[in-house]
Image 1 (cartoon, one colour):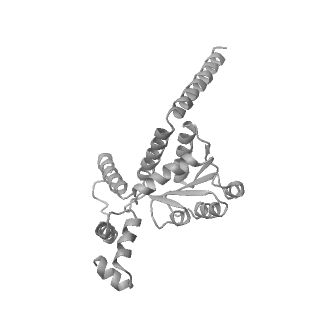
Image 2 (spheres, helix red, strand yellow):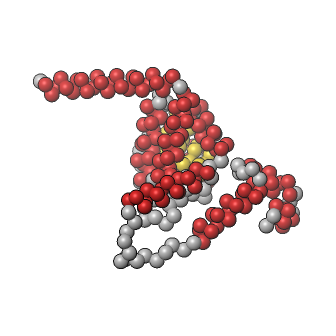
Image 3 (cartoon, one colour):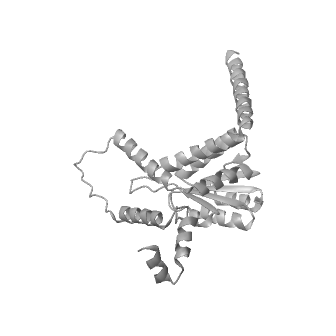
Length: 247
């Protein structure tokens, strides 16, 4: 449907339809329709039947598939959302990164990387009691980042409650309609798993690395000083360990 036909069907002005597409980050309505068509075609394509005798995909083939998926999802992240994510991290007084299951490891990675850049970040346990304690301590200076590879209802509930406490919330997820994406102030959709046996870690891992690098670029000299302090502390720990071994 053209913008004019859609506007007529919905009893709207054509300009409203065009502005809607632009608010989603597209240059215009045709770009929005193009992406919708691609998404529908991808979801309608049935996975090929599994042939037990067929050779398994090689590591190289899986790597190529990951590169292809990464290029696709990166092109779908609105520039405004990417800017807002970096600004949210820089503005936060305290950052809490939460994930469950496989996403828990990604949450730890992001938290450690942000701390290595000199930011007050931590990765609390995703245990219900720990999440309840965290939720009670949130305020307007807090940023809660939820990482979701699957449904993660408890993380989604934390994001929703964090907003009632005045905290800012960001979701890194593999679905724009996941509970975490719907609960957060800002959500970055890092693609989907295309029917893979296990949730793909690559899209969110790439997003985490890019976010950390963008934040570090804004912090500038602060990151250099923090990394120097970490290297000095590491050298001191290693030196003490060497002396203990010698004794």
